[in-house]
Image (cartoon, rainbow, N blue to C red; front, side, top):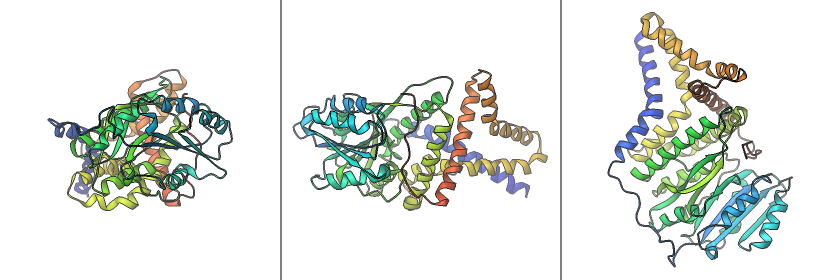
Length: 396
């Protein structure tokens, strides 16, 4: 019994260490001497592909004007740019703002839906309109209303599609609106770490594990209809690229800006929704875990282990409890585990006192977000009835 408990304890610790620490170190090691894709379009090539920027909006009046301006003020040839926007039954001034902007910019196509469809539902509807005129080598850019492009964002992603084996290119998401009193510092650190891991996966093997839905480009022939009530359409489309045998990479020069979450409650809801969507994707793409290849290695290391992180945390705690009589190390590790599990409570107490301890804040963030993974799994088991949600409250 003791031996089994020790094996379980160290297995759980090893899996979490691998996914959160060792994996990124291995990616850096494997990337030594690797070169970025150099089969790219030049800025003024005559054969640059048509680009379609596609996104759904719901009550985005605070950001939509800036979003549209950031798209139109691109360095990409305007005659090769079209923008397809679907309003998911917005009830604020979003539609009026887009109507006024579209009247001045004929490359914008605006569709207003009178019933909630959710993000993936709106995208499917927009693509059903767009697909009538699409060429397989056209480029689709999916984005969110609160993500602002820089002038070079579009070109820096699109340039890679000259390489015919590349099916997806992700942008480099940088955060703004970071404050010390919320969780924005921790969320920014997480996203920056993810950006780096995704970049290295793409650099090493072209196996980037899911572009951030905030902004990514897809070759038109890699598009597939998104299933009904899907919560993580970005990961679904990303994995479809890899399933087809094409490459997915990240371009760090394709910079765009997103306001970051500051409220724990809002981020908890968002992470819960993401986790429910993760299990939807696992139910579709689980077979990719059983290949002896880079896709399986990255999928397991970067995603699946983390999705089951709460289980490993719980099993490590239980195994440690059974090992308390085995010496001081296990007593110490049990105390540490309990303190870490209590970190969200301790952080809340210090926060009320106006004290911000950076180490405690990161521990609190990690365990709170793992609790959100548990909540997301419960949502998935109960069944996803709709993929419509209100925008996350962020610093704008």
